[in-house]
Each structure stands twice: as structure tokens, then as C-alpha cells.
Image 1 (spheres, rainbow, N blue to C red):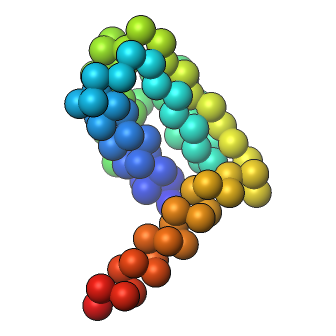
Image 2: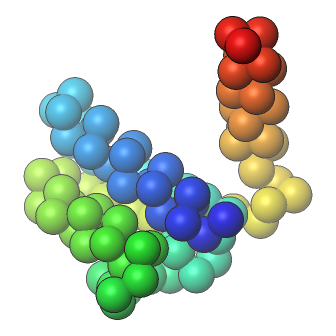
Length: 92
């Protein structure tokens, strides 16, 4: 699960760079990943590679923040995940 959260954070930062956004707020419900992003702490794990990727892009922003959101309060992510499952099921 943390690998998915790290992949999502890395992807959103990469897209923000490609779209030339000046600032970026990454939020997620994996406290370990958000703390690693905040502290610039990575390791040799799969998640560590995504944290490294995020920090390769951070200097492209005038402002960058990482925010932890409790899973119960992360209704947008819950809705998008549910929608993605429905779309995937309807395409098969």
C-alpha cells in the first residue's frame, strides 16, 4: 500500500512539473511516505526510489509542501479510487 502511495505522490509531482506549475501540495494518507517526503529521507526500498524522484523535481517549484491526511478524511482519494475501479471493470 505504501508503494502505491509513493508512486502516486511521485507521479503527481512529475505531472505538475510537466504542466509548469509554480507550486505543489502533495497530500496523502500514508504518514510514513509523507514524513519521508517532508524530511527528504529515502532508502533502498521501492518507496525510497519514489521519494528520490520527488526530490529531483522539488527545485522546479517556487513552493512545495507535503501534507498528511487521515485516511478517514481523505474522501477525494476514496472517490477517485472507487471511480478508477468502476472504469476498469467497465472496460473489461
